[in-house]
Amino acid sequence: MGTLQSNAQFGKLLGKVTGGGKSAGKKSGNFSTVWESEFDNKASRLAVNDGDGSYILGTDDNSATVLDANGKMLWSGDYKKLTTNKTNKSEYQYVIWKQKGGYLFLFDERKMGTDRVAVLDIATGKELWNSEEYQNLMPKGTKSEDGADQGELETVKYISELDAFLISQKASVILVKANTGEKVWETNRFKGGVGKYIYDAKRNEIIMVNFKPTALGALFAGFKNQLVKINAVNGEVLWDATFLGTVEKELVTRRAILDLWIKGDKIYMYLNGLQVYNINNGQKLWEAIYENDMDGGKGLFSNSTNKKYYRTIADPVFEENAVYLVMLGTRDRTKYVEKHDLESGKLLWASEKITGAFSMPNLYKTGDKIMLQIGGKVQVQEYRMETRSSPMGGTYRESVPYIYWDYKAQKNGVLAIDDKTGLTSWRSEKFDKRITDIIIDQDKTAFVGDGDEFYGYDIASGKQLFDVKHNDAGVGKASDVIDFGDKVVVLSEKGLASYNKKDGSRAYATDKIRGVDFFYEIEGNYYLRDQRNSKNIIYGIDMTNGETKGSVQSKGKGGSPKYGSGIDITSDGEFIFAFKGKKVEKIKVNN
Image 1 (cartoon, rainbow, N blue to C red):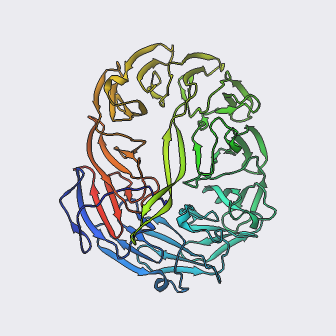
Image 2 (cartoon, helix red, strand yellow; image 1 turned 90 degrees about the horizontal axis):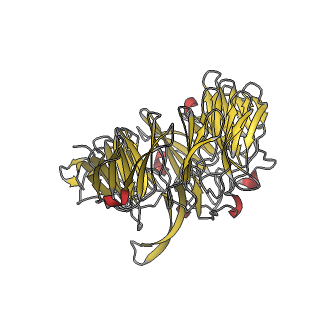
Image 3 (cartoon, rainbow, N blue to C red; image 1 turned 90 degrees about the vertical axis):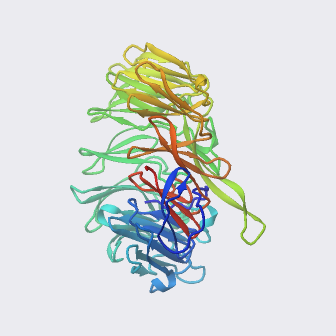
């Protein structure tokens, strides 16, 4: 539902167009342009589509324009005229998409006077409701241009199953109907922002975990870590439990770093390990937790204020009767795998301990083996100060967000663990410089690269089936692997190389693309992304032969946080929207 104000540059528009929805048969890269159109305003804040391209929204601080699937304008207007409470300069805006249109949430922080909230209907531009009742929803004096979160506010959470907003106030949490603003209920037994929630449709209940909103922390006196179960009808807190650990948010995406699952009559919360609660009364049943070695600059690769590492530890792997966890030794800083009985939490086994491992990002259950990936890519989120040219002349400095994958030098390897005993069945440590993710094929074979070599292993025995010199492909070091039918495509520094799973023979190699650090698979469409040198380029790739279908580059703002500023892609992967100022281009991916 994202609207992160991201300035990583993306999507290039060709030629000048006047009027809305002008068809264009020319090519953007090798993609076909379906139409080019214009917003009534400059889409400097939000520029996104609703998923299937029925609605395209463009906003600036003070106004919004919505186009239809053909690029024709549905409506446009200034916020102070569209809202009855004269909401104007909206420091925060985000969009919630629904089946037909959705909600545009506006927050007008007033330095002198009462803050204003308004919600517009995206399909019509009509005001659904407004309020001046909710205050302190964001920290005073924070400009969105400073790199603050442009997704949901830390104090406002949209509950899609109830079509309602949960609003955190100083003394309480309030549930408000999204389409009318009507207060449904209020409770003073839950404080803080909603870090994660699960709606239990069977019981019509909400399970919620709180966190202390960073810049608003002083408002929440008496704050404590809370896991609560709430009656969704009337807001009654059915039970309240405390939990261990601090819920943090990712630097750029602002995603809460925890997960919740309901399995049977238990709630599983993943926060520096696993904490398990009885869903009926909130009683803690068991836990397997550790101290996070990334905290406070004490880790192997210390986080900083403007640069942080994520996805370093594999998510839990749940089986019918057991759960597998990557754990951290708190004293000797080792990492290892534990298998726990799902019902009782009993430790069934612990694997050997591994020292010097910064990341263990992937864990696979395959047949009677647990495959552990030691080392590999980690996600980096950072803000960089970059110089921009001002339209009025001269330059200015701007904080630009980046999300990318990177490798850290460490001891890399593949470890096969016997599922019954936890003992090591076999290991391979041929990965001197790096290790890609592991591709598991039919529970029989595993494929993995080290940058210069590409290997196949028999999972049962550990026998190496082949060793291919990937550097002979001439596409640079391997950076990622993509499972593609009977082949593995190795994404590399300068291009792609594809290998047949049966024998490791090379199917193709192409060195036409350099500097790619992201790939996306959207309904069978594959995209690669290059965001070097303050620009973003997205390529559409035919994975059967490695050919480039086309590319898009833009310097627009807005766009989806997933794909970068100035660009959004429909949920079926068939169309790209490229934004630049007032202009928008709809691009067809497959001719």
